[in-house]
Length: 363
Image (cartoon, rainbow, N blue to C red):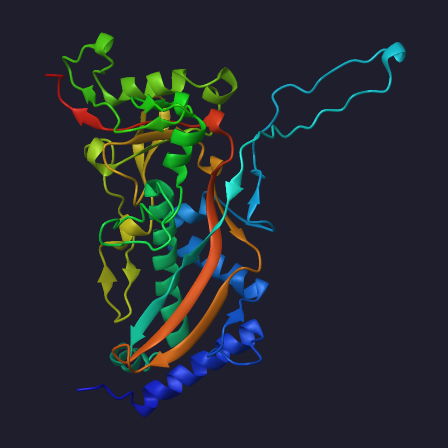
């Protein structure tokens, strides 16, 4: 039997529509597609950073073009010179180390639906709209992170069943390294274009591992070896962080942090908020660098890079949205939301990674 929205729920929904219309200047209302106002767009980005800590530690840049060069943080390592009068004029150098690499943004949909039964339950809260917005912001941020660490291709029609971590949504950071800096990706073969391809060869970590066979006695030894493969100006950076999957470390490296848990919509406490919303930082170092467990990072993998070397670009003015009741869609409020987005490693010299890491000696 179809669910009918209560008067209280309908009033809360109408107030929500009006708030969204005012925030975005949607003159035709929210039931027609409208461009998200830049100020409202920035609030959405800020809310994601508040809800998921990792998003506040990387770069989230608005850019004008769908295709272009990385805009970010890479610095030319030597610009000093001297010029005699005989060789004037002087020849200034660009302090940004621009390369031939490019970014490409693709349309990404973040469509959500909210059943009317939930709206009725939430309608008693005066901050109904903010509660809903924060849940959406967290879901979008976690989706972006998952694509960033797991994305390997761009499908015309994504398949969330076959690719539950967004593997077919976009080219993420780890895949960018395989394509753009394969020399910094341990254990993968190269194709004719110089890209790292195929499955990564197993890397064994154990007390009796034979280093001559490419294995290590500890995860620290692996991290040290990865960092040693960086150029000197990169491996000496004090901003390097070791990102690992939770499966690669034990509790002595990552004791759970005692901190307040987030309030759920019904006033309770969520024990999962520590894991999905935050970053767990080790009290000890791995490979002489601070170590982090980040949500959505793939298992059996390690990446060493400054967090500010990872970027998410979105095209300014590309976010489109419209909201409507859909009784035919299981009596839900449906929020269609899309934007052009892409993932960028600002300077591939400052990133290295290893995959298919296994604890135990090589057989």
